[in-house]
Image 1 (cartoon, rainbow, N blue to C red):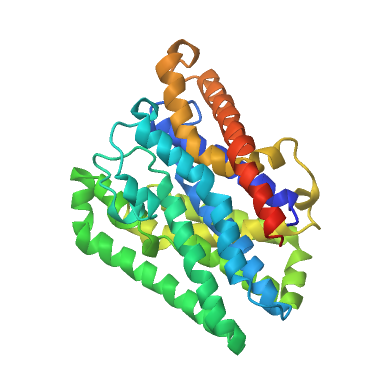
Image 2 (cartoon, one colour):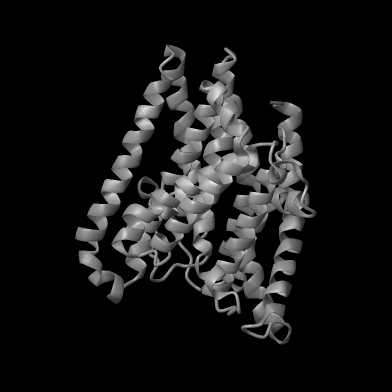
Length: 363
């Protein structure tokens, strides 16, 4: 699959942003507090990237009149995700000292990708980042079936309609959940973990980014002239992304307010989709230059995402003198350690199965 330098840069930036956020939530402390506290938004960027890249992979086959690659798609995704994911779940299950928090959801929730629906976040915070993988897995399960049913009938507009319906349903759910389930914010003050369980984690409430990415994929595959026109103006896209993201961050930054969950989340998705479109264009500088290290970080991002909280916990537990809280040195050492562990996981587990996948199931 072709690599896009701009998207590698976005993926690398997103994982570093996530690491800053989780380091802060786990007690790292940092002079970069405004950046750290907003790092949860990077997951929405990952969602947009997934929606765009995976959607384009499926839609392009139909745009070219090729057979539907559904069996190959599922097998390739399993070989991409399951080996290193199951390894990390096993580490958390069998080596409690490696957990960044003592409470861990039952193994069946991780193995069935339902942790984001059933987590008891008040007690079980270890490996909590798996929630976003659950959202993406549900997307991987459903999208090929949707494509299989609708696109052979040349009704790609029906896919657009379904995406809009899902977006509106998610927005309506968050509106209802905040005003009714969370009792106008009263529960947020007494039990903030309920926000995570009811609004932040469930798949049906967090599809905005994936749907925005799918919108980009559909434009690329089914409206090539419009897509080409957009790709010819990457700096205008970047400017629009900057304006929308600035507005979105101001609204969504508190994360648990009514305006954040109802309007901030969709604006983040829109802003990140404009950013992805801008950096997907090779006519812009950021879309064609290779930033040193970005491709490497992007390559190991999945292993890094799964293991970085565990790495930080082990670092502060066993070599606390090297990571004094609140210092830039602490984050640098934490990041370097996490990159080393992520790279080891990638080269020993992830890459092994990727090579097997590419030999048996070439694109």
